[in-house]
Image (cartoon, rainbow, N blue to C red; front, top):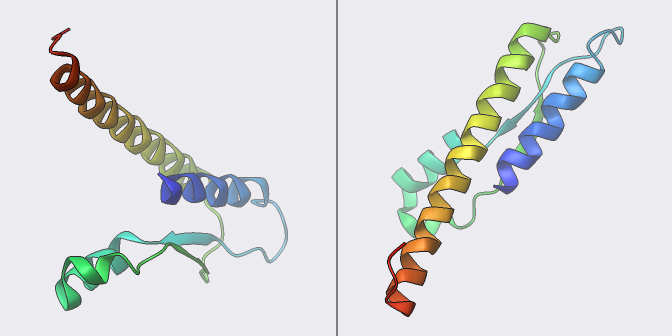
Length: 99
């Protein structure tokens, strides 16, 4: 969730600076680094990975940023629903009431 929040902030900053002369797009790196840590070091290596912001050499393309914003929003909704379902199951297990 922290990565998605950071990604939304970076994307919003890119959109806000789309018309700024010589502004280069920024992006958040996380998933690739997480996957590489898992391959290299297993689950224990994944704990040390945190998102990072990098400046690219690309200019901002508003349509691409809007797609990135929508994609991030969909991922946030998916994680939120998954967590809600998880806690609902946990509550059912504790109370014995299945809603």
